[in-house]
Length: 447
Image (tube, rainbow, N blue to C red; front, side, top):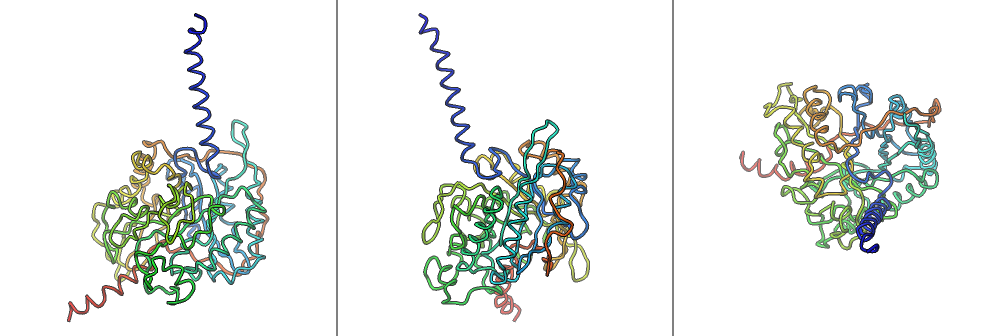
């Protein structure tokens, strides 16, 4: 009788233990700074135009951004990052620092001393103590995205897998020795238009890089070659993976204000988009089961996924004469059609390792138009984004903290050069390719 009375309690205890075990196991499998569920939401802001994190948070009704991104250049010296880092310190939140580092002058120009300076800087940042109102303390979270979009041919270090893989491993090894808590993001470009024929830094036919990139061994670089695997440094050197992905409009030459196709983002992630999207499933290859790489997979998958830079462009005016393009459905509708694709419970259920987004917060001239990528320049866009984000309740906003004294010296690292502001046109290389492809047809039509 007594034993029968205990059975429900034993069953309940067993269920509780099983749940706790599963939860603990899930936590053990998380990467550095990976939330168990929900999203980190970051912004790459236009610091060089005088914008500050405080300005942006005011426009987002005092929501505190999860992480802040900016970029610096590395050559034989490291560009000074302190203006950006001081901006982040001033807002007194526990927001993560997301540093993109570009070897703009090429891999060979990067010195061991500059890599050592980068490692020391990141070590100081990850040591900074932050204290919440509750009294709980933690250290600053830091993400490093090094030599991003390495599979493109618009950067001097691009499309050089033989050099890139060795160099990337060397940087990660140096940083981990000084700053083991940094999360390393491996971030190629989306496959939209790969291999971007005709780009400035495309490999020479027959070269070692060309042969590595010709993954289907047909003697040419084409849309059926794997745009990712040749550049992958190995699971032990990667904490997160991510891609750059943008909505520019309906079709080349990207001057039309139209809402994004409802599966456009998913298509870029999975290789199932337009005919210009390379058919390799990035999410499955690196965040799913690891299947799909050519000539063979180099990963077991399971990495947390981040949109490392993303936005929908609203075309304000033509650069040639200042006239506005067709307004279409309007700024709010165009941008909302993009963010609602990832602020979407069904989407997040299909892609459970989709854990972070970093919005490209710029207005800038590109190609034929002035493009507004921002979520906060237009108050109506900012209000709509906040409304949708609050409705989803999936974003892990940063929290107010007090911090110890700045870890930054007055002059951080000497700089010999300034990193140019990123173009935001992640697919600009393939735009040139499309133009080259269409030119003969257009000429014959005219003639």
